[in-house]
Length: 236
Image 1 (tube, rainbow, N blue to C red):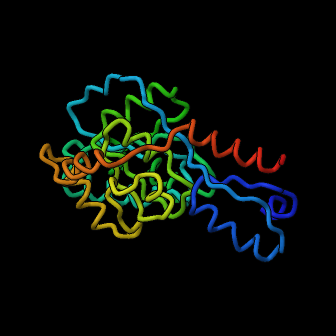
Image 2 (image 1 turned 180 degrees about the vertical axis):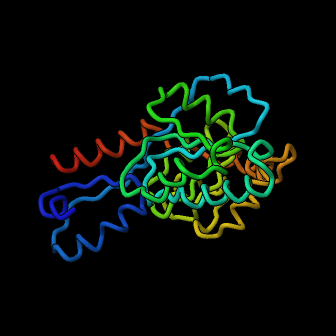
């Protein structure tokens, strides 16, 4: 970021939240590059058959790294499994490769008996398989501590899949008023949301479906238009 602040004549940020995090660097530098915010685009997805699975499941999409807070979900699923039995609870599917500094998460995934039959890791999947997995899920769960924007949120909503995510400015930019926003440390609230969404008559799912009517995703043509405006302004 020091290099960006020192050299850039124009900066394009993926969210207002990202730009807000950058502004203190700019203030200290004394430089005044041109700034624009352009959310990442989401396009209509070609219909894909959702996975046919009698056992409900939830998905979490993203690299397995500390800021994504997978530990909250793993502790939640361990508690559910120990209380009710692994076969009696929905599955959790983690979509994404393993990242770094994940000793606790990896230790739970590889050595916790209670997670063996209810938590799965999937990595290296083609986009079509990820889309099918998300489309068939009861909800996308994203308990992150920090995000720059939140593409999984917008893509899940495009598939009309409920989203439960951390109450972060960037995720509110991505999902508007549609998702259910929770504190990433509030374990009981996440558990209550999972229990609600597991039920066929989920109140959370019904509420989000109603709010979707007022949500408009940001499109790639809008993103490119903002980028071109910045480039033309710099060239003038």
